[in-house]
Structures are given as structure tokens and as C-alpha cells.
Amino acid sequence: MRKVLVDGDILAYRAAFATQDRVHNVPYRGDMERDLPPSWLGKTGGKITFKGFFKCPVKEIIGHTLYYASFQQDFSPKDAEEKVEILLDFVLEETLDFVTPDQYEVYLTGSNNFRFDIAKSHPYKGNRKATDKPKYLQHVREYLIKKFGAIVSEGEEADDLIAIEATRLGPDTIVASIDKDMLQIPCRHFNFNKKEWTTVDEWSGTLFFYTQILTGDAADNIKGLYGIGPKKADKLLLGCTTEEELWKACVKAYDGDTERIIENARLLWLRREEGELWEPPTVSIDATTQRTAIDQVLKMTYLKT
Image (cartoon, rainbow, N blue to C red; front, side, top):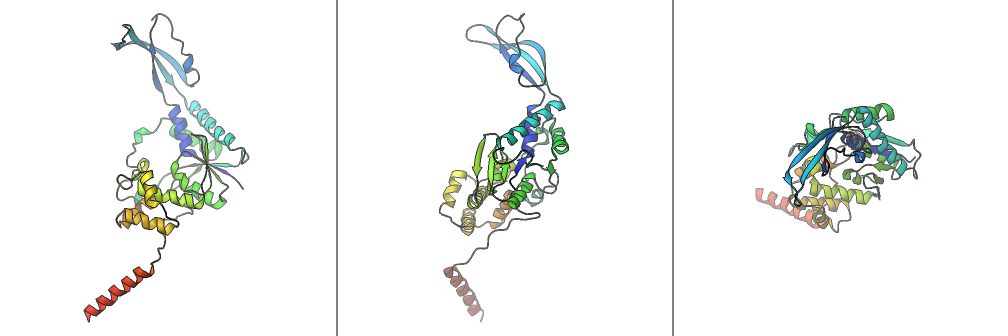
């Protein structure tokens, strides 16, 4: 059965951010006794309150004093609920050609992410601040759970649950998200921000994952190799046709620091089954390497005798 797996973390954050209380200072030059029509604010929602005019300290070149009209825009929890419904409705409308409206699931990240314990080199998501969270974020999350039955992860991220479910359902699954990390999952992807569709097969998903091992992920504070961006990573992995070769290329790029590679890989990898912890592929030893290893053992044995 085809199903749309929706990244609820993104929806909740965008809805909450869009309904943050804010002040708008609008450039205005004219009769100060005449009201400035706030019609441009009518489409943004919330309660609009005119706070007054104030003078800009810098004069324009033409010699007129520049004034600003100040508006306070206040939102309610209801505004945030309506906003997240609009976002979710858009996702479902865009995917109607592939599934029926009721064939979807919304996923949210809960508590106790295992990645915080794995990260040793740098704190996982250590570059984020709690103060960055919008006012109604928690309210929107609770609304998604109550009204839309959003599934909350525990001990892992919503991305992991989405990857597990997409793997179980197969490549016809649709993942709706703007998070590039999802592109390691073999299925259909809908970026609802860019309105773009992408189909990821097994190999392209694996290649994307190893590219991330080299570049890291700044958004999650995962440090890749210094100076390595997507283009350089592509060159380093050029010509690889198996996962073993991708692994060897990464080991070479990291100067043999497999411990750091595995740490980054486990932070970046989206689980395909519950409790999974990523492991590097089994690398076969070619005949020359094997002969050299045997010779070294024989030499050491000979020296001991």
C-alpha cells in the first residue's frame, strides 16, 4: 500500500514560526495626519494593532525626512493550529495523484535521542539553542498528535521512524519533507517547500549517505572533513561502484581514522529497523594484500625463532 510519511517536525516548526508575535516597521513618507492603510498585512493573519509613527534618524537624499509606521502583529494558538492545517493540507493535495487523502502518517521527534550518546567528537546538535524555538511550537505538536494522530518517536528521531516505515512499505512510499537527510531513503520524495519530486533508488541513497560522511552536516553539528563540500566529495567517490569501494574511499580521505568515520556515519544514518546501529561493510582482502600479510607473519615468526 502506498502511503505518505510526513515530517511533522518541519510542519510544526514552520507553523509556529509563522505565528510568532512580531513588530512591522513600514517606511512611510507623506501626511502624518493621514492613516497608513495596513491592507498589506491583512493576508498574514493575527491581530494587527497600529502603534504609531516614528522618525528615522537618517534623511533621504531627496531631502525628505523618512518616517516609519509601526504595527504590532499578535497571534493566538488558534492561528498556529490553522497554519499547520494549511501546511498539511497542501502536502496531501500535492500527493493526491498517488494516494488517497487518508493514507498518510505524521511523525514527530520525541525525547532521548540515541545520537546524543554516540557523539564524542562534538555534541550532537550542540550548535542549537533552546531560545530558538518559536512560542507555539509545543502547542502545535500537541495539536498534531490530538487531531491527526501524529506518531512520536522515543529514543530516536522522527526521521528514523520514517525511514523504518518507508523500508517496510517499499520504494513506492512517499516521504514528504524538506530535510535533505531523507534522501538516503530509497523511495519517492516530495519537498513541499520547493514543490519538487525526487526518486531515490538503493544506490543513489547509499551514495548520498557516504557523501554526507565526507561533508558532515552543519545543521546537526556533525563535522566532516575540512574543506570538503559536495563537489569535492563527488570527486573522491567518483568511480566507486560498490559500498565496499565507497567505504575504502572514505577511509582513505580520513587518513585511516575509522573511529571518526563510524561515529559520523552512525550519527548520519537513518535506521531501517528498530534498534539498528550502523556498521561498515565487510571489506574483502585482495590476493596481494593477503599475501603481504602472510609474509609479514612468517617473517615475524622466523625472527622469533
